[in-house]
Length: 171
Length: 440
Image (cartoon, rainbow over all chains, first blue to last red; front, side, top):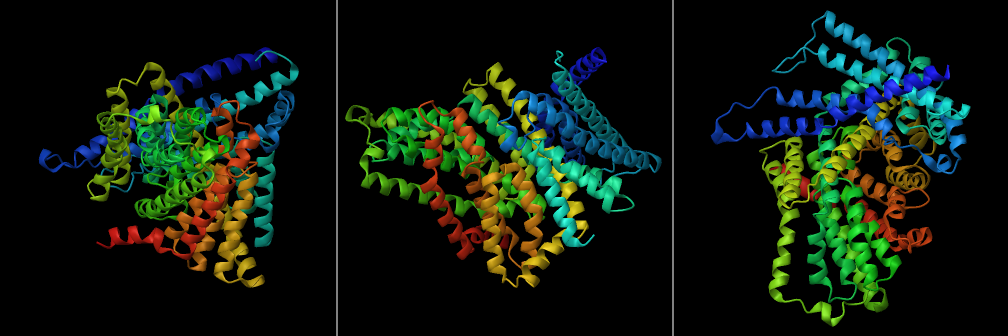
């Protein structure tokens, strides 16, 4: 049981780390799209203002924070209210986390359910966004499903880490 | 369940979840999901996800990663060193001059990024040690750095106002313009306070010794050049935006790129600076975005179930208060909450609760955005819970104790409360600029 958890943690953390390290550079993708959008507005270049930049930047942003989310958990960037938490021992923190992280898992589960539901709908009806560019929306939603799923995997990994800590095993 | 009970249930369970120390977004999101599933009925399981779609469609949110990136590039690459030198040489001969210069430095840093963290980092690592070495009173100095860095969220560009704009559905451009004069006014009030205090008690901020004061004029002029950097970055960002040439979001990308290029040109963009800026931008952006997604879900359920109406009803019908009294009560409760709630949590909890109420009461939401931001600034700084207090503790030299940090802010908080009252009594301080520019 313990070794199964250890294997899970190793694989999931490694996967999310890799994804996060790639997505991290997405900031430059967003900057590039937005700058291109600004450049096409310069009049004497006589370029047609792009139709796709606005939505493309939005899609990039969604990918950035959904796919990058698990890595931000690994970096311990997600703030907690540490009025009490901050002064607890590591063991007490692990005890509380082991329970409350299940709420996080539940929330991500509901998110995932909604995401899949919405993606299936968009795929079946070939839904497009109501803009001049009109891209198909389901690939973006599929990316959201992937990001939320990875987040769920990471939350479960955090749960296992707390269990292992309480059992005194190495993470 | 009655509306009042729903409001109470959701609010109480959220506070309880937050108190357990679970990640803020998880706590808020879980309460939203549970309430939706229990109380909503059909379609409830899709509610939390619809917040993800809302976040995607809300275009100005793209400014968030841009400004976070900018802030990290500026503070990590330390290109603000020269700026500090400029103020040091020019303001040094005046009593308390270095502290006044630090406020000036903070205003410039605020104009280049939208969070208070960068100002704090620059102030604590560059200005603080210098001022202490020159015999400035340590409480005076810590207060100055904290108060000054809080300007970051009021002087445009401001991330807090972007988040507020999203919740209140108000244009970000107008909100930013509304922050300009209150921000400058507050900076001026800090400066007056320091100048008067140091004139009365010169030992708090001694003038620089003669040998340090005699800097050749040519050197002084050369140092003024350092001021070009922030003005340049700010202009590159704001001028095309105000003239209607680029959108707000495009401007923020221009700003991020300019800051990045400035660091490259000044040869400060080392591998390490690059790694930290890029990684921290992802970490902090994800932290913010996930909280926003959870809070929007919470807000939709809370509002949809009629809890906002219950609170409005409680204040206006049952307690029979007039709008101004409610407004003042709101700001007071906000300050109170700020003393025990984490600031980001407060931002997402308080805004969805209060903004609809402010609207019902008939106040201007742009104006309230400024009040809201100033109150957040104060809450940032007041113990026991202030993000700034902890940052200060982490960055300040060891001779500054937690007690020094706590007591140092008292006079500055009083100045800020005065500024808050002024903006409340004279809304034109905030509204004149956006009204003038947008009236054209």
